[in-house]
Length: 397
Image 1 (tube, rainbow, N blue to C red):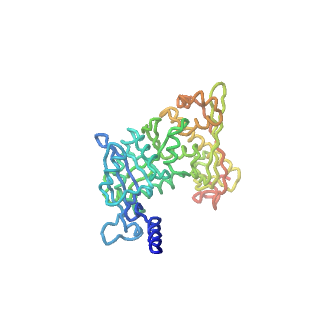
Image 2: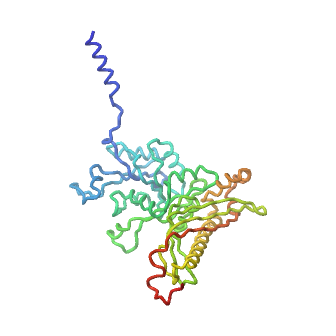
């Protein structure tokens, strides 16, 4: 009897500790970056930047005995939709695809122009897809070409892409989540950072690898999630400022009285927006705020004089307000898309007016007026007052 009871206990233990359906990490392929392109027949081409086992740990070294020092390889699949393309890609791998470690999603320009709704549908339904990642439009190239490019500072190029974005855009949040929120909103058009290959005519292959890619502005999408156009990187920073996802930036202004330029690095950047209706016209009052130090003084002004600091501060505030107003004007007249989320602000501040206008908000956005002003706090002027290249008699006190 005791023997039978012991057998039952052993069987129960086996049932509770068995891992028959467990997916071992050694049986998974680590997917770092993915790219989406369109074939001539409109099929989706899904490319994956897959980590080579045993090489990533040697990222800081000189390679390994296999002779392949890249640490990754590219594999592609094709299909009528994302799921079918992923299945075709899986058929070329000896390990199960594991996209949860993916740090970058790259969309070819041609793919983006035809719309990305099928991509978003699969990504938001798939439980293994991390939404806290970065997504890019590849301007002038395919996503596969970008994934194949090298990057000298990082073993895996996809990691280099999101690190550059973090350093150059000053953004506080991942771009995929930001895109999804805007795409599901009635008061904002979605945007996406742009990345492009640095390939110049006449450069040899080795030189090109040293400048593989760069963040190159922002892509504008319409309400059907089709690529509508691009804006420059300088303009993209001002868009991030208005949407309050900018953490730091640098403002440069020419000082007429000082006959030179001054740059202020803002380590803290923010904004406040309020709405108003004046004579039947919708007005948005945008106040840009920032706090930082003078990074460069090419003017003749001696910044040890508080009056000169005040003059420089006013010039910098005027320049920042002018540049922000220019990008708003461009969106109103060239693209006619509210990428800033002013509709969401109106929804919060004036729900009754928003309910009346939300059906054709972009039309009302193009007719709205914008009052933009800046208010900066200069915390430091540096170790010297005037520029070191000016003689004492040439400076203005």
